[in-house]
Length: 362
Image (cartoon, rainbow, N blue to C red):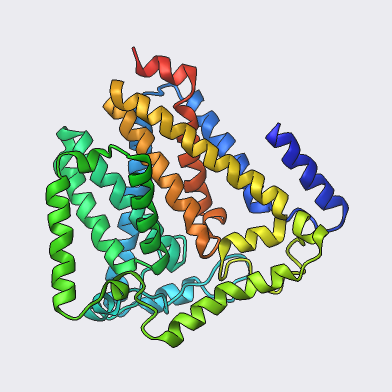
């Protein structure tokens, strides 16, 4: 029913001359369907195979990030600038001005990392998901604990070098979600005390050296002027949105008429302007319901199968992280990150498959 409704809205938008403004979202749906079919048609649908695919994807990206880090730290940043020219019509340009906390980037003399997907935000989101993945894996698969420990610390270092204010806010959101839904997160069960002790030590050292909580989380807003600049960047689209007609609010204005670049400022507003509030509400409400349904399924799995429970919980967290990255920029529905987002959604869908359920319970 939802797909039919969205198809009718899309058809109407096309007929009134604003094109197909939600192209990235539609491609996301298509890719979710394709990934889901691949997972289900695989000759072996054992959970370990799904996990290996995810590990391989993030492992390859970690290697690339360290490759980028080493080259840039040794003065070869120009290679990336020449290869990924900002003026290229079919891809994003490499950003040598990406930000990360100065206390970290000034040590090695470069700005924030880009990743193979080109962009500081997607690099920070990717390394955040990667850190959570390997932190959970090392607690779930004891036979590979040393390997996953290594990848966890490798990911954590990369996150510290590429973190953004958006990714830090998402961490706060994840903590709030965990408290509200009372996740029995595997990687906190046995090490909760040591984790809290370590965090307390980090904050004590930071505060004792004159570094405030605000400087750690919102490290780009040093002054009230900085805060005002960011506030205006988020309020300007809102003011423009309030000037739209009722019809434009309901069905969007497409791509051509919007004066703001689709990948800047507030990602959710970029989508809302393009597709209209009806399409926007249906998509977001469906995803929230989907996440909550998988959370209930996770609670069931947590009682009967810890490996499936891990797989379900990790993908829930990954989907939440990628979804909330739309707070700032729209990378998650663009080439590269969109494929990862689609794969995590498809992985959650695969857990509901009767075929997958029967195989995993043999």
